[in-house]
Image (cartoon, rainbow, N blue to C red; front, side, top):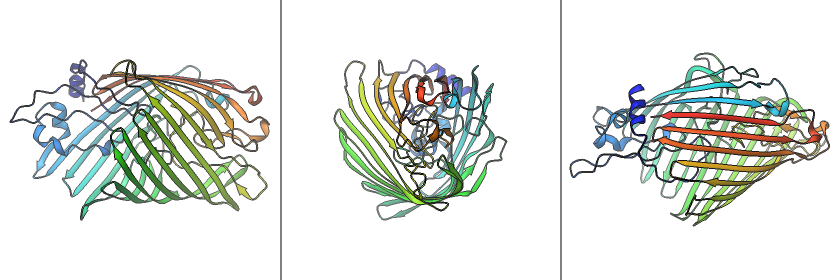
Length: 476
């Protein structure tokens, strides 16, 4: 790893092309300079790290593996069409958390330091078979509040799966079995939890296929029961899920779009909500999403419907999220956007129904996951700037409301931060965020993010929230 870090430092002056702003900390690596292409040596591909590491494909590196140390690690020939790939990540992050959970529960007012180290290996017989292993070690130092598995997890298997490829006519079929990260669509239902100190994986059997503009798949398995120790994460047999998804692409280039459908049947042994004591949650989640762009304009809309049973109650819940944006190609390439989120809450605790939206494996609404989408309505203007090819800045301001005044305010993990009977106010507070990412070189990203939340007087006693973090991420 030290040799690769030396390579990264020597490439710090490499030019970086402009890219669209990615999700927090999920940056794809910018381009790096390579040796001139000659008739006898093709040009080496540019680093292009993806949010989920097993989505990266290095099969084309056979002809350029001797270009540098990085290409040699990404394509290690073994025999015939069999090759291996090595990769890794180191993320260092100091944090300041004032008013955690808006002042409820244990607090950490003097800061903490987090590190996450990952190393992975990929063995492939091109077009036939694959075995992938991803080890993760994450620690938090000086954290005086709750040290949960999302904050710390000693050395463990974050991913370990085998995969087979089966050609069926023009279609590409892949069967994957084992522990794996998953992110579908906009990751509203399935997210790999990049912002936390430990990432999230599931124990699944997945079958995926694509042909022409169509793609889709089937999945079944369990959540992972995460623990703080070494090699102690295990399959959570109290949290089952089965589902399928399909998507289709339309058009290409500056005028293109995509439509997606996702259905998941989940069965969780015990969940609690503000209006209902812990009970078995058998939930059906149907998501329909459309995302498209037309030159400078873009739109992303997703509607989720949930039904099923919670103990003796019927589930009747929903979640809607939508973003419309307009970007400019000149100057600092500003992009203005408006995002609206509405997650349902329980309207009547005595009507025999549970109306609270229950996310499965959600993507956080902000970098630190201060609030969950349960019973929450958000109106949020956003601005993105790109002063140069290396630097991206994001700003947002939001108003926060309870969708139903008869339900509480929840954290991302489902903890009740304010119960319904604490206030008759719908308005919960205001929130402002600022973030920046700087690509030091193709392998190293520096960044920061800050969040300030002003809780309404109607929901006090409590504290305003201030979260600040800086990070350095190295990946190869």
